[in-house]
Amino acid sequence: ELKKGAIPACWGISRQWGELLAEAGGDPGSNGPDSWERELFLTEWLGAKSGFRQFAAQNALPMTEGRVFSTPGAAARWAEGLLSCGKGVVVKADRGAGGRCQAILRPEGGKKAQGRVWRAISGIEEALEGAVAVEELVENGGSINSFSCQGEADGAGGFRLLFAARHLAGEEGFEGALLGQGSLGGLSARQIAELGSRTGKKVSAMGYAGVCGFDMALGEDNRPVLLEMNPRRTTTTHAAVLAARLFGPEWKSRVCVAAAHGFGCAESYPDLRYKLSNLLFPVEGRGEGVVVAAPPTGDKASLLAFGKSARGALALMREALKRIGE
Image (cartoon, rainbow, N blue to C red; front, top):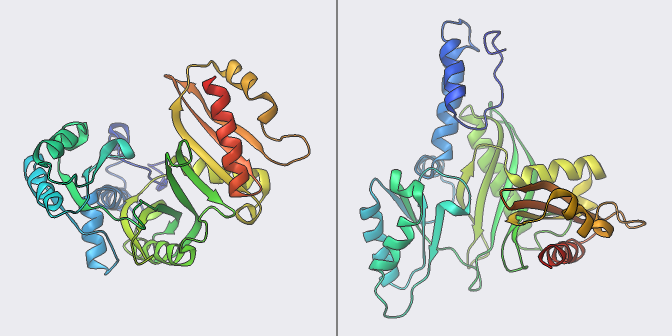
């Protein structure tokens, strides 16, 4: 299909993808290798913390204060300075996905920051192998309120916002996300959607085409600022796709989805379904319930809970996780 001039949506770079590009290298036409290489460049550049930070500055998009350093040592020294001034920091691998590629550090009175920062960076494998981003921690009312917007770019300036989600970092008893009806809890929903759409259109105008998501955080002034871009599908994407299949195109106004990603689970798939039997979607007469989104693999599993409200979805998820832990 590549040799016929097809340009598949690109979710990331892999060795196999590079080999296919090299194989098709002699094909002529505007939809040939030059176009593919351009799309791959945009995916790699925008997906890196350094690239997206440069992109945001060029397009006057609000982003967290921070810098990207070529060595872990330089990053540690700058982060120590921020902590010494009483500011919280986030250290991240320049390239890497998910919470495992970052660490959050808050100032601790008169304690020295030097050892803490280096230990945090040393615990991020990707940070030791490449550049490291250091950002000021953005909080709202003393807590971290982070969100993501996801949509589709057409590569010509058009962008369709698909959904927004609120990140859950354990405050509800599990790590994951909440999306759909009432998920943002009234927290600057309009501003979050506007920033996501504006950023998506800028990305699209550069020639990026396909699914993309933008992580952001709410500051003390209740205004969102950008954190990074994910030029690919994410675990939250699958929750939205399944919700649309089960509840139709208007799912965001009909149901709230709680997603628990990669929690510890030693059960087999049949045992997991047995424990959740009367919670599995659809619970009789309710149009709600739990779905095993990713069966146990390597002692990890993922669940989705569909409820008519955010409270209902969270209650279902907490009950499901309680049963699994018993």
